[in-house]
Image 1 (spheres, rainbow, N blue to C red):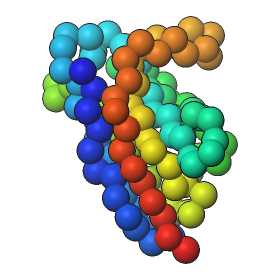
Image 2 (cartoon, rainbow, N blue to C red):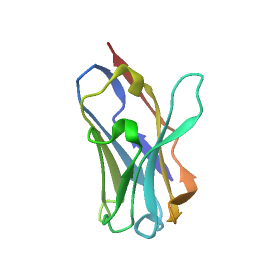
Image 3 (cartoon, rainbow, N blue to C red):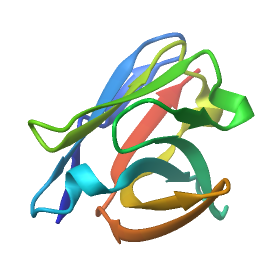
Image 4 (spheres, rainbow, N blue to C red):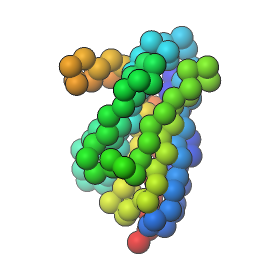
Length: 119
């Protein structure tokens, strides 16, 4: 029910925008998030956005470089990634769920989109 697109191979310093399309009626009633998993590492939180876009959160390593946004009319969430670094190389996953007191309960996951940043 979640499908990511927009991944690819870029050079350090470049920008890339990921999109995630949701099918179903749950989108506007869920917070949306992005996670990533680098080779030989666990899945880590990247960014999240509230149902009505009034609140966003980022992990420290992407703060100021990445921007999460959503369009509830299109059932889409986006991750604009600027000034990419090789350490941003990972499979990026879109997710939907709830956030309460800063703790996420993620119900739906996409299949992932590969982002590779060369030096």
